[in-house]
Image (cartoon, rainbow, N blue to C red):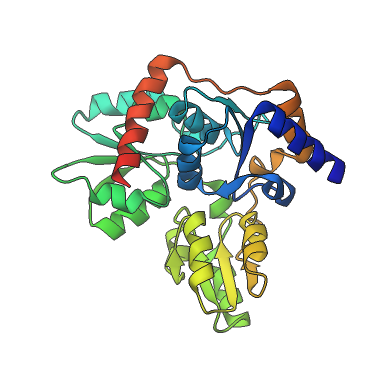
Length: 301
């Protein structure tokens, strides 16, 4: 393992590369990353990096977003099969058809979507800024929120806006059940419960705070509590324990595992740097339109 890490460090310097990893990645991948964060954090970091190469340890749509924001960088995804099932629940063709049937719809697109879908949207959002983005839409009558219906429902309640929801969802977050939270709350009285807004509404109702993964990490640091029930993909527990060794973290459900996020390993990161694979490129016509939606998001936040 140490030899792998040393060789990755050598190649990173040779390639002028930076390694970005999502909070859901394997512990070993988080530990060799230059930066670990949520979708918004990673988008900002990609936009600011001076490195020539970005090795993106996440899923396809995240690497695409980095490629769109940083057209002068080479973006590598160490595992081409690392896709997001939710992102695949909406296609650009289906979105175009919906817009034809309902002209005048403003499309707010969760970043968990393909570049082609972003290109058909008006503005992007992440789970960290979705409420702020929708609140900023003054004078808009109809808003279509794609593709996550559960995040959309949460945003609708927080903003009072009438949203139309695409029927997408995150299968990993749906594995977290309200009875999981209730059981742990009884077992650990005084604990704080933080959940992701992709969770079921019944789970969100039981939470002390609803946050993106980056928001969860920040709130935990600021809290005086010692025990935390974490309702999101279990990969984040590694980062939370590393940054807060004096606190205890309990996964709301051990079933909340995203198999796609776990496809990237140290061996694949090394291979990616050795062979410069797999480059993620977005056709310029699509990238230009998608970049406009992403830029609107970044300028709002």
